[in-house]
Image (tube, rainbow, N blue to C red):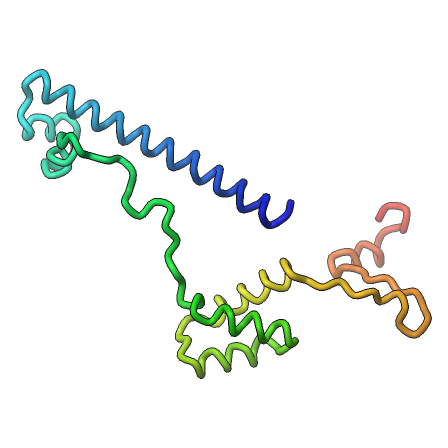
Amino acid sequence: MTLEERESSFQTKMMTVHEEKVKQKMERVNEVRELKKIGCSNHEISRRTGLNRSTIRRYLDENFNPVHASYGKKKNGKLTPYIKEIDECLEKGIMGSEIEKKIRGMGYDGSSSTVRQYITDWKRCRKLYYDRSREGGRKTETIERKNIFKLLYHPIENV
């Protein structure tokens, strides 16, 4: 899957979960409204449903919206102001530890693991593939680390 496909798949799952939660909340709201219609007091509705009386007042309001006000809004992380600088450094081939020192000098006070994770994701998504088959006139092949042990301990036909 490409990055865009993964994000759209995640968005779809996230939206499905959100829609289910909104549906469940509306069922509770309708339950509260039905109890009010049959003449129950807010105190009685609270006792029957286990909801707080202030919640019941909100649910009885005709303008009540079950969708949370911050749904769909992405919060900026501590690393967000430094993303452009990190990307520029990565394009230049600067090591992660040097990048971290640089952004800490600019005021970043988040964790090192956040920086490392961003750099790892950046490299994974924007990895440049170099043609190493022409180095020194010999054809070379790159083997992933996870496959080295397979090659060492299993017959080549089984790898």
